[in-house]
Image 1 (tube, rainbow, N blue to C red):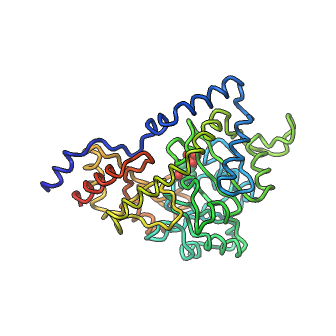
Image 2: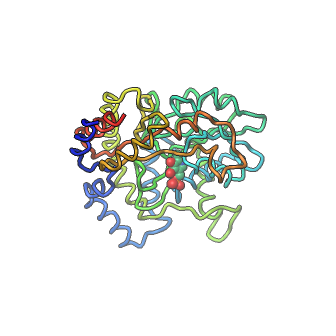
Image 3: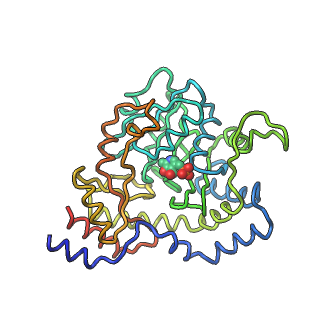
Length: 369
Ligand SMILES: Cc1ncc(COP(=O)(O)O)c(C=O)c1O
């Protein structure tokens, strides 16, 4: 353990991510964009929102995008827009953020928790087949950590008559074999929570789709089911992407491809050092999170030691959805997801991190094992 001590002592503080540094690097652009919105009082239903929607859709080679108030709302709106409602079962992976399943419940449908592949931690043909019933209407593949669920699986589900709503909250600009995230499902949903690869200065979300009818329905539902100013065809929500968030997102979108390449380069350095210790990914992954698998008994000890050494780490997610109290009525067997929850450790990942910092994190982790 003497080498551990020396690495720990030589470690300077390496944050899990550093939003302040990222925003400072483009501070003038952000200030100008916000000042512009304020000077026009263009806070809701603003031009900045429609122009961001166009830019975000183009970045994903999608027909269009509809902004909304959060990633959770994007999922609810997309589910409703593709026609999911009471009586429908929607298959959701048991290893994801709670919002994936929560959105199904809010949309009035029934979440069916599927286990995940024990290696990739993503949905697979086998885990979906294991929970599929006559009432299954849709599948929600989650591109967890920015690792993209293979599109041949998604296309197979579609060819079997299932609706597919992709949870791309962690996968902005993700791709699979050269095709952008969102191009395989009926709709894909993004979160702009501040810490996401594309993050706002508050909450925000968007749905992208190649189906104009789905986009039009999302646009109606997010705005009180409005048909005209004071005529409302159905019960909707108040979930619009506001003008300031859209302006901030447009600025950051201009830098996203470079930031994503940088994440991919850092992930390669991590992979060279840590190899099979990492949750594997395919080309096109965008590395929202960089996740190691440790022995269940070691994870919490290593987590604490890294934190004490000044290295920011996290756990995504400690509980599988099959262990979440709020989802008790829908618990299913999900041994793979539950084992993952006990063993995953997210390491620092930030586009402005240096290669030397990655090396320090890897030295420390290896010394602690
Ligand atoms: C996989 C996944 N789905 C959905 C969401 C919900 O997004 P939001 O927090 O913007 O509502 C998140 C964000 O935390 C997420 O990581």
